[in-house]
Length: 122
Image 1 (cartoon, rainbow, N blue to C red):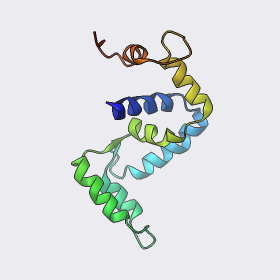
Image 2: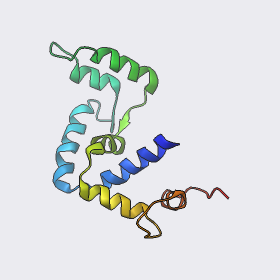
Image 3: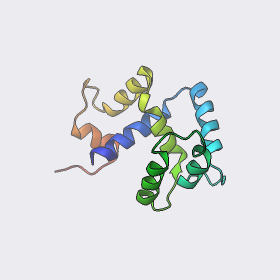
Image 4: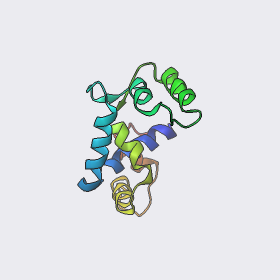
């Protein structure tokens, strides 16, 4: 559950990225989406990243990703969410304000349920 909330929060943060940051990220995504399918597959990463100067262990990492992903690729929104793990302070504040449904200056489980459209626990 925690990883789902984290993923959703990162996707929210990616929605608050300034357009000047989105352009380069979109360019990178399109460069890695070798099949123009709207997703980045491990096979695309392997073709792009593996070569003579590939870091040690990269091939093993990609093989592990392939086994876990079962052929499913990384969508653009997932890519943006992953890219925003080093979010700017402005984006982090925007996400916090969106999660602070009651405007209390703190986020609790009830706020998260409302913000993510989850059923209440009681």
